[in-house]
Amino acid sequence: MGEDRRQAARAPEVERVRIRLTINGEARGFEVAAGRRLLDLLRDDAGLIGTKEGCGAGECGACTVLLDGKPVTSCLVLAASCDGHAVTTVEGLGGSPGTMHPFQRALVTHGGVQCGFCTPGVAVTGAAILAGGHQPAEGARLLAGNLCRCTGYEKIFSALEAAAEEVRRDE
Ligand code: FES
Ligand code: FES
Figure (spheres, rainbow, N blue to C red):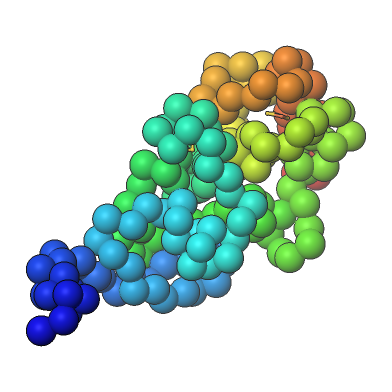
């Protein structure tokens, strides 16, 4: 037996699971290693690279997506645990391809985007804040899990208020 085959024989088997989930409104199926992170499934398997990896430890919020409408840090969520659930990434926030959510538009017009690395996570969390009917004045508290090293946050909070106003007008 060659060295390669001996190593393959010794390598522990990685358990793989089949999952089905809805991503941005589309039903998708994957076969993933049991320990695969949702973040990696989204970026590498589903090709949705808008979701960013910052700390990889649940502390920066760059990887935030919606799981059944609730913000989660996808670096801490196992893909296998999402079987049967719905995930929304920054690409799907506007509801249809090429359409931005009001908060995404407001982030642009209020200068809430600088280097842009935190922006997908901020946009996802902000969309959940607005969908939950929270007051934009609560933005500082509710966005506390999304770290931004560029904007000083004020412009992000202004954008949230502007988006809340737009959503109210459209209701
Ligand atoms: S990359 Fe997930 S919280 Fe930082
Ligand atoms: S815009 Fe650069 S980290 Fe937020």
